[in-house]
Image 1 (cartoon, helix red, strand yellow):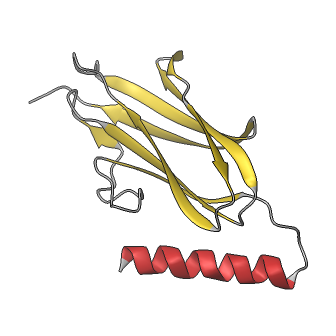
Image 2: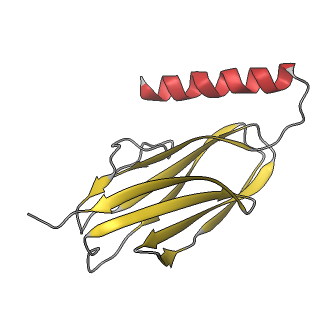
Amino acid sequence: MRRLNICLTAMLLCTCVAACGSSRQLQITAIQLGRALNPDRSVSEFTTVFEPKDTVYLSVLTVGGGSGTISVRWTYGGTVVGEPKKRVEDRDVAATEFLLQNAGGFPAGQYSAEIFLDGQSVGTRPFRVQASR
């Protein structure tokens, strides 16, 4: 059902862009954060609270085709802990996944993921890692 909603939303956005006469360009429609991914690379288990040994998954949903570079700046306590980038091209509706892992476990505290499209910030998703029980 969730995938159907994502597809319907993306189709509606595509129709609107086409009707308005806009040229094809990559647009971000959603930013998802969670513990697991679906086969289409969208997040399947949404959360903003993680355990130290969890993998943090972030999925950026796009529509419109075209091309661009999507990047994520992962931070912990104001310190950048990762800045992966992915080039995406010629896709109408898609999900681009990023992950944050630490084999030794993450320290407890506040984190954030700032998402960029072609170097321009498009949103931030705060999350936290809680101490293991």
